[in-house]
Every structure is written in structure tokens, then in C-alpha cells.
Length: 180
Length: 235
Image (cartoon, rainbow over all chains, first blue to last red; front, side, top):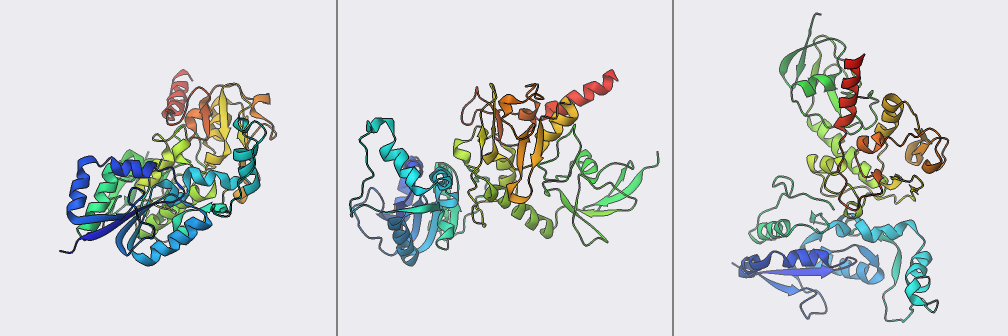
């Protein structure tokens, strides 16, 4: 059997979903028997190659995320939205109630720790935040979702192992559905 | 009193006239999903989750507000009903700002449980992200409109059980909101007795005591029915 390729991507999230992925502990060896992790925040790889499964944490908050997500959709056979931010924006979407300028000012100008000297960073190499944060399904077709903040390690491993063994997972049937 | 014969999900039952379809179903452990129903206060049929199919009727009717009639043939688990339950649940989540991760009721929330029961893994509708007020003016309690699903259980408990009628409803459609007195801060209310029954009645994290933090809320909505039953004994 051909070894499968997995990518894990970190968009607008807190990396908690990746921590939960690491919480599968020694079961990562079971994953490694069937697949290679070819791109991940812990793998030195710039552009996402063709993969079988892409686990995507976080929501789309900027132009960089948008381009990355569109690229991933073209190169991933199965695109999995990992965690509440990717599925329904969650905490990252809480800035959607405010205009973007207020959000920037709250962090870079008005925060007490700035000692009244803060300014909004504007280096051309930095990404540009979108006005509104959106979940992955509003941008691309998502093949599977694992909600949860973070999703449980057992839910992540279950989904991975089902896909790696060419089966379709069912979180509802297996009572692994969770939000928050 | 002569009992009526009714049929629920192809089984025959005998039930007293005057009972609602929901009451009969609950007596016989037939699961009906509800959010706005709260034992001890009147039903209003607001949440539309308890919809059932009745043979001979083209419309779905809410089980909580529909009384049984003789030889009624009721279906509670058809594909049509399941489809509407899933849609209703998703709309609850999409309408306001339900961020489970930072909510006091995370893990004990009736809305979360509802999502699991209908198998909702994601929401197919765009989120509205409305700007909602959080009223922290009361010395002990908070009203967070972001997490309110307009079940009006708090309104009915305050009115029918406590008799204070601090809570009411303003506006319509997506602008509908729960208000204290004449839309004034809760802390300035002249009707609220601070009894806390609305907190117990609330199915989500919309009403909660200031003394607790994320995921700590333990609600006991059954207390409302217990109170009403004890009052019957006195009367």
C-alpha cells in the first residue's frame, strides 16, 4: 500500500489544536506506520506539496491565510477543518463585532503596556488582516470537520486513522462530537 | 375521565384529554427535543424543536402547544422532522455569538447538548456576528445577549413563578432582545427581586452569576417545577 501524506496547517488559531494533536502521544507511531507528515509547523517546508489529508487549524483572518487556504484546497485530497476556529470562527471571530481599526488600536496603541508610545506596525512584509474573520467552510469546500476547542486527542486520532485506512469517520456515531 | 386513544410512532397509547402531545411523549419516554419548554411554566412553542407530524395535517405542529385529540396519529422521528431540527439548531448558533470556549456554561449547556443530539458538526449558514449588549449592572448576575436564544424561559419564570415580571421582550425578528423593566439596566430594576430563578431556567450561558468563571456554571432548571409542585401541596 502506498504511504499517505499528511499536512497540518496553522492559520488563525492559538495552536491549541496542534497541542491536542501532539496529545495523541505514542499513537503518533501508528500514524507514522501509514503516513508521512510532510508539512506542519514543526516541519521545514515552505509550500504545501500534494497531500492526501490536510488538517487545518484556525480561521481565515488575513490575505495570507486566504491564499494559503486556496492553495491547500488545490493540493489536498481531503481537507479537514480542525477545531472550533476553523469550523465556526470561535474566539478568533470575536473581533468581528468591532471595526478593524478599533481592534488594531486596542492591541497596539491603547494597551496599557504600550506606555502611550505604541503604533500599528505597517511593514510591507507583514500580512494584512481582513475586516472580518471567516471560518474555512465560507471560503472553500471542506471535506470533514472536527469541532472542539481544542478537539480531543482521541477524536483527532480517530479521524486520522479512519482516513488513513480508507474509511469515512463519523464523529456523531462514535460520540466524539464536542464544541468548546 | 375517558381516556383518548392516540398513536405515536406506530404505537397505541391511552392518554387523558387536555394533555399536550409533549406531555404524553415524556410520560412514555418518547424523546422529543425541546429548548423553550420548561416544566413548571406555560408553553409558548417558541423554539420549534418539538415539531411533530400529525396525519391529515400538512403543517408540522409543536408538540408542547398542541393538545391531543381522539385517534390522533403522530410521528416524532421522520426525516422531515430531523431535517428541520438540524436547521433550527444551526440557526440558533448562527444568529448570535455562541463562543463555547469562553462560555460559563461550556459542558453543561442545553444548546451544546442539542447540537450533539442532532449531530451538528458545523453550521451551514453565514454567521451574523450581531453586536449584542452584556448587562453587568446587577450586583450578582450578568445577562449576556450574545448567548441568548430567545426561548423566553426567564421571562415566563419571572412572570409566572416569581410574579415579578422584570424580564420581557422587545423588537422582532433578528433584532429581538430580552429586556429588564422598560429596557433599562438590570441593576436599576425596581421589579427584580434578585431571586435567581431566571438563571436556573436559562438553558445557555446567557444568564449567570458573577461568582463563577468559564465552564463552571451548574444549572438546575428542574427546581422551577419542584417549586410549583410544592405550592400545589400548600394550596
